[in-house]
Image (cartoon, rainbow, N blue to C red):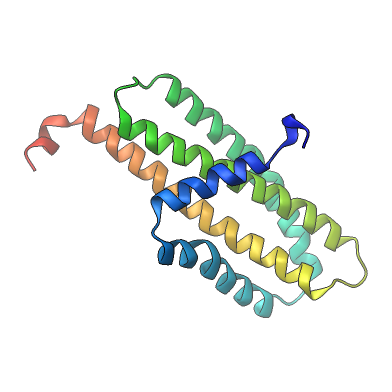
Length: 168
């Protein structure tokens, strides 16, 4: 595939980090079952799907630039990190792959929403695929939130109040 748009690198890096982070059962629950459950719930409770597709377009159009900005913050943070701080670098690597995959998923949601929004009748498979992608997006946003939280907590413990946490 043409190198500048080879998104398979992002996907393979993401799954490599997830396999490193999660044991097999939590991996399946987190990345397959949780989005599937969310997709099923969304699929059955959403009434006017055309309106929801329009909302997905809006949410994706807002989320994609925010995630790209967050990637730039991760890059800047990595640039300022000394090489001996292995824990922080690992968090930043995992955060980079998760945010990149979340951005890629948001782009997929945007494209699929636009396609479904302009079709007269939508195949159920593509509707469910869209809701699964939304569930996957939600799971990844939560994982990114947890990773940013842990990274900030690590920085606070290391720099801001090292003596207070050293005694606990």
